Length: 118
Length: 118
DNA sequence: CTGAATCCCTGTGGATACTG
DNA sequence: CAGTATCCACAGGGATTCAG
Image (cartoon, rainbow over all chains, first blue to last red; front, side, top):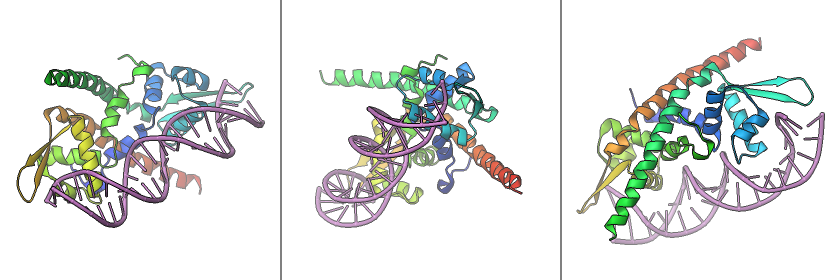
């Protein structure tokens, strides 16, 4: 692997994943498949309509997810991962596992500091 | 893997990696090993002293890198990955490779759009 | 050489209200 | 139901200057 600072491709991948709600949205779609807007909103506690729309648009623009609109009343819009988007799954899982381990790491660090103070 | 929105560990991993210069700093240290401040600055074109210091502090606080100060004049400070920090390498490489592929993906998309317009 | 301190600008995210 | 449209607050990042 070549590491040329000028063309760090890690940033491109990060650009897709970064966003306060993107990881959980992606994990939800990966795990539960196609979901409509309101279901997605329920699956992501605390998110506002505006933010859900924003994050979905970003992901759609990058071809990570697809948006299917049903011409009916009331409106129905479904979101799902693209085949291309699914290629992110290994990275998301790796980060989820690393993050889980990191939480334990921090807890050990804190308890060690407590001992140092005694 | 369980996906509980309330405790999305992907965000913990992202929190470490996110920062305009962190990926390239980490890749540099992983590839070239221990480096001193001024060398690191040269390895990351365009970064300011303030930002380099900031990003290094962040990574140090998370135990990803270590900082070794030599008591001498002029000052000499060396940075290197911790063993723990090295556990991030697979993720960084995966993101680098995904990012490289994504760049090609976007180029294909653009050329397709050009055809559509003709 | 390494780094702290300051000021400033921008983007991201959030609260809220409105609409087909 | 599935969005838009505003307005606003805050943190990240950058230019510059000072210091041990």
